[in-house]
Length: 251
Image 1 (cartoon, rainbow, N blue to C red):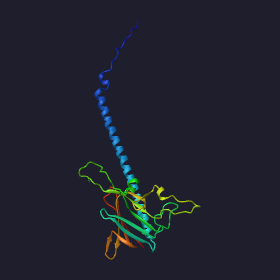
Image 2 (cartoon, one colour; image 1 turned 180 degrees about the vertical axis):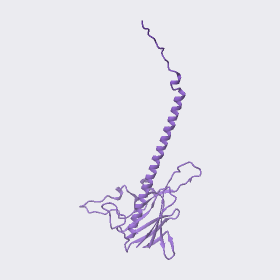
Image 3 (tube, rainbow, N blue to C red; image 1 turned 135 degrees about the vertical axis):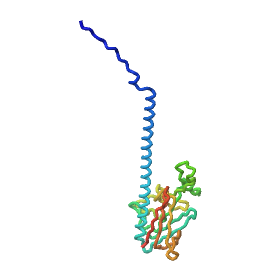
């Protein structure tokens, strides 16, 4: 008669399972790796956003510089340029271009017979109620990126480059209908003098014009109406220590 042998049941030893300490250490390592991944991805995303913002600013400034180059390269014989100083500290100027009908044409119904165009830095406007009360808008200052005590506590204010013209809109007769009035156009901002301004470049820390005086052999920050031979433009963009400097030759 055959005998049946029974094998004893094998129990798991403590070495075949994870201890609580090992589980805690694994979770800690996983959390650390996850945090590092998020930090890398977040930093890369922020860097991408900053690069895109810089590229957008560069495209705007390049378009403005090239538009001025086109205007001055074909400046009319009777064209005039006047450079006014509005404030001394900081230097705030207005460049007035007259008798240049092809300058800064916007849209399909652009007015080509503008007699005068004014370019200048503008402070961000206050709400309409405060503007109507005659209160001047204060410059918007940049906030420091860190709490470093050595950081500049009073960063430079930011402005926007604006364009103003008394002939923004061409009037139409009753049969063809009327153009949009300036008060109804969200792209235009009215100043305390009743002039309407269109934003060309935002967030500038400064912008300066200089006219070359061949007699004095120096650059001047103001000049009466005339046709200078040479004009210099310096654009100070937000967060940049070196301005863009362009010199135009008027033919």
